[in-house]
Image (cartoon, rainbow, N blue to C red; front, top):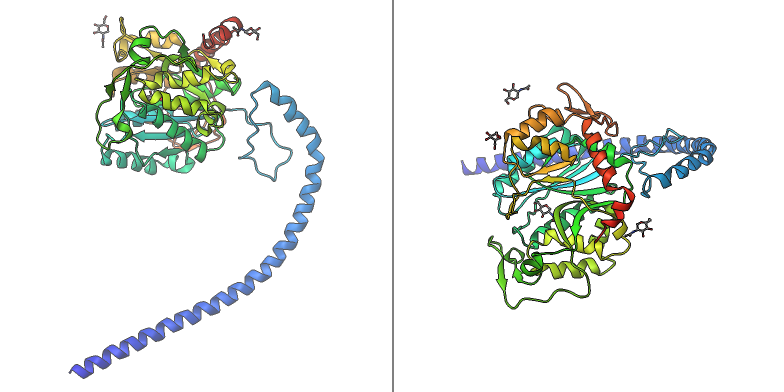
Length: 445
Ligand SMILES: *[C@@H]1O[C@H](CO)[C@@H](O)[C@H](O)[C@H]1NC(C)=O
Ligand SMILES: *[C@@H]1O[C@H](CO)[C@@H](O)[C@H](O)[C@H]1NC(C)=O
Ligand SMILES: *[C@@H]1O[C@H](CO)[C@@H](O)[C@H](O)[C@H]1NC(C)=O
Ligand SMILES: *[C@@H]1O[C@H](CO)[C@@H](O)[C@H](O)[C@H]1NC(C)=O
């Protein structure tokens, strides 16, 4: 009994081993055949490529002189960013004109319970030509963050275009603390590293909402110089001198993994003398060159100011303002507006007034690109969807890129931009801001 079972096992093993050897041998034979096949093909391919390269070089030489001239004469008018020929195939010389549609890189961030609010904002903001970094901070639950990552993964348009990125290593963000600025800088660094060709960075939260379509925004910004920065600012600190610039505070979010509020320490500090303080709105549109300046830090100012602002209450309302206004090469690029409609109660309290349906007319009249802040699923958002964005029921905001049925379920040509009335409102506002005397008189004063 014992013996017979033993043999059986041995026999089975033997068969098994044999089977493996056979499979291995077969694989080898196949590989060899495959290799021969490949060798023959490589040879033919090599000859073919040489002929092709020769032909290609000849015909390209033809067009070069005239097309280069055209591109160069085009450059000085629009910004100074090098051309992006990424989506152009080599086989089709002469090259079509340089795509002049700019690209925006967004950070949209939220906290605990903001998932659905953030999702709605992202869908209203989405355009395949832009880039998006989404961040739910460490206070939100793991499930919430996972759900966000899943939604992004499962959206067929996001998956096809690949321009939406969820920050998986969430940051601790304390309201009014420097961790807000470090979170913004983190997103800037991710965007610089992952996506090479964007022109402006826009920082939004889940309580923000667009008042114009992305086509309106792309169309309006297409004709602007790419180095403009929209940062609302003033050197008139007023009450903030005493309440913000002199007290010292510490943000535990920098070193604790449990959330707690900022706290104050003694003594107070004097106002700085090696740079001038500026303050303004925490919402801004930053040029790529300015973001690179802040992140790469070849000049020490952005870094020392970051350290200075570590102990400053509400640093998002001062850091970028102070950096840009103390840097002579960037000062001429500041536009004194944040492109947001924000309604403060009079007298201003800690938080802005939550917008409702009665604010719609004021919002539209402002010409701003974004507004804040909104409650989740507020009626006014439905109205913005219907009247300003023409966005239906959870779908994307329609634009020139939309294809498929229902609309916007497939991506057509992303650079096909169809501006609407929002572009008119926005360009009227920007035109006013860029008018010569007012434009540079309001810079860093
Ligand atoms: C960026 O966005 C966040 C939204 O979460 C905001 O709180 C912050 O103040 C913004 N601004 C800056 C300069 O970081
Ligand atoms: C809007 O205004 C109307 C009339 O003034 C008022 O009755 C209503 O309560 C307001 N709605 C909100 C949401 O404040
Ligand atoms: C919008 O969505 C709701 C529920 O998801 C659905 O009942 C309604 O028919 C949809 N409307 C349109 C126009 O698709
Ligand atoms: C504004 O710009 C004009 C011309 O570019 C220049 O002459 C003038 O000095 C500038 N004014 C300020 C306040 O920078």
